[in-house]
Length: 287
Image (tube, rainbow, N blue to C red; front, side, top):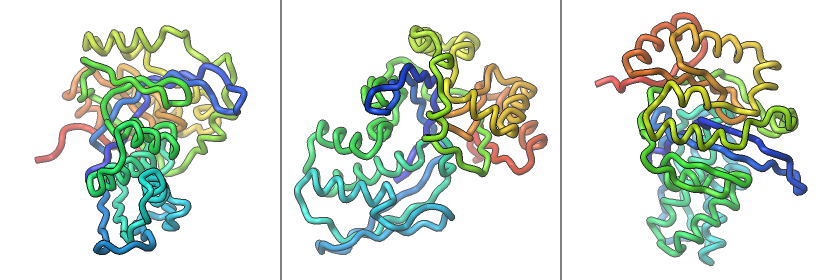
């Protein structure tokens, strides 16, 4: 299964809740590049243990701590079936801890593959199981542009949004803890409450110039301050002709929105030349 990634076109942290989580207003946008590849081999009809195979350094192979393994256990618990003996093969292309939802996307893919095999959960039960594993996991069950509220669990699919925006990514090879990013947030970082509506309206009109004005991330301020490389990358995006540049999620992936795919292709050459060592992702697929 090809596993999509995501960026947050808008991540507006509204307030800190009494349970310690933060109330969000966010717009998820799915990307087919980068994407992970995931398969599950079931060892006949036997029950037993879950094995995870992945060559990417830093990915935990213990099924009790890996989201893919947790997904198997959560599905089986919800479906009230024994855990099947299986091997999960994961090929990572989505940056780890890069603010692109790679772990959550892989987790959702496991749930979908288990549902294809067993078909024991309703859509509601599948969504509830996904939510129990992470606030953005339910989004990856659909991988369509969506707006989310609450802690990310109140999901609504957005209609008439272009599904192929001219977006270029710059992925740095270091993680940023989401917990740390949220700890740095203060109410002064929040955007106006109507920012999502304005962004959605601009996207539905395919008015990218206006949309760029409303793209934002209220977690980004602290990250740009602590990690100077991210500010350098953002500045280079603007020099390359981007309409806007912003951090995705808690980072460190930075994305740029362009006026057209032709402009993006030229920018990709510029960014690759001026940011050696930073992974530049996006553009037309090579034939």
